[in-house]
Length: 223
Length: 230
Image (cartoon, rainbow over all chains, first blue to last red; front, side):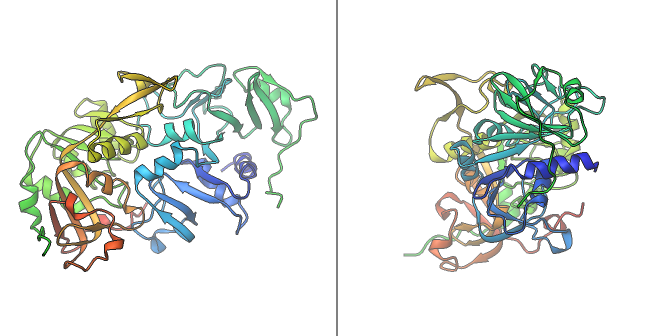
């Protein structure tokens, strides 16, 4: 993985405050947990029916009945709980998740998220993504700033089918941290060494600059 | 008084499944998927089935055997991401697929099991998941009518059971099993351990035996139950 991606993931880990209930989406978000200090007080939730996810296990140590929603073999921690799928999504829809981190194909300047379907190319189904995006108290996105062809993933409006409208609060990319505000995208931080103008160039909608000086990413958790 | 014995042979229970039936199948990935009951359904051969299951397992595993054998005409599910074969059947029109938001599929099944006609929810409003669904205004906000789901048969995997059909699950093998065990006209459970009456503590029961019609102990766990080597 590129060091920029790794720094993005490390920076996103600082979004998790002590005491939160957090759901980490499949893919890059799952790796955020690797950047939390051991003994950090947080409750991780997975859609397939568990709170209190412990470290991921290699196959030779795995329990065949204990996976997360991405199919990785995980472990328990003292205080873990198991429940059925209805209970799991009752937690999601009733606002028990303080934070969810999701991947994205596109995010619009009004916070619309598209991350489940590319018509004609990719349509594996929506899984639990709609409910996470619509109902977690805070939704942040981890994504590369552009797609493989270099096209912006942060756009004025999404062209792909939406997962949920006006749900994204903050976006962590391999170039910057960007907030979604009533005025549109606002640059919060840049990855060290990348000029704000370069971030703006790679963004498919106006990117507002803050009034204060831009801080650069700190890769460490700072605790 | 003595509770009835519902222990059975798997083949004779599965023989009740008819062509065209709607069949709920528990599981999320490998955990909780009744691999042995699925294999028995392949052997039985009833076709034109509508399968209701969270996911389509992986190629060569679980309900993929039913897809391979051509017994499935329709799949009501949430995510097929780990089964490229299921996606290609969908893309070539060989099976019809209806995607649900995962928690909404759970609630629709829960409603079916609870004798409720539908649930109201704002999940998916403003997206294509809302297309074709009835909208009801409630407290000034639009809600989608999510109709209850029931099935002719549910196939369930339990960790422990007694001969009355009281069931207990472990870890993340619970998932859709306790919901589906309430939502079908005929509920068939396979169990890793079958206990006599009283063998399962009353406080440890997840699914009350009243919901279960047939329970069968697994003679062995096939390799499909094992940890997947990726």
